[in-house]
Length: 262
Image (tube, rainbow, N blue to C red; front, side, top):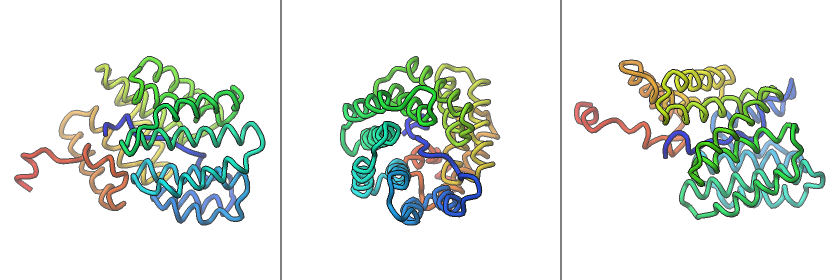
C-alpha cells in the first residue's frame, strides 16, 4: 500500500503531566496498543473512546485485532451521551471501516462514508475533534473515492484545526498527506518540506511506530544517496518493531538487484 493510503491519528499525545496518559502514550508510540488499552480502567465514556482509538489504530498498523476493536467501539457507542462523544464514536467507526476497506479485509466504504457523515453532523465546526474528522474524510476522498482535490481541501482544514488546537501528532499526518499529494503532482520541493516536517514532529514526540513510514515517505521525494540512506533507516526501525506497520513492507522491499548482492 502506498504511503498515502494509511494513517489516522486518534487522540493526541500525552495530556499534561498525567502519569496514566504518559504511560499510555509511551506504549502506543511503540506499537503496544493492547497494553495501552488495558491501562484505561475503569471504563467510562472517555476511556472507552480512547480504548477504541487505540485498538482501531492497531488494526490499521497490524491488520489484526478487528474483533477487539469492534467490541471496544460498541462499548464506546453505548456509553456516549453528548454530541461530542457520539460524534467521536462515529468518527472511530468510520476509521475502522476505512481500515478494513484499504486492507481489503472487507469492503466497508459505504459504512465509512456514512459514519463520518454522522460524525460531521455531531461535532461542531471548530471543536477539537473536527480536525481529526476532516483528516479522515480526506483519507476517504483520496483513497476510496479517488478525489485528490477534495482530499487536499479536507487535509488543509485538518491542518488548520490541528494547528489551532496544538495537536502536533495530527499535524505530522496532515503534513505527510499534503506532501504525498504534492509528490504525485511532481512538486518535489513542497513534498520534501512536508515529509521532512512530518518526520521532525514524529521524532520530537517519540512516535516510534510512525517514524519508519515518515522516513520512507521522505525517501520517495529525495534523490540518491539520501533516498537509500533514509530507506535503510526505515528498514531498521521496521525490523525493530517486528514488522509494524505491516503495509510498509511492500514500500521498503529492496530492488531485486540489491537483494541479489546482499
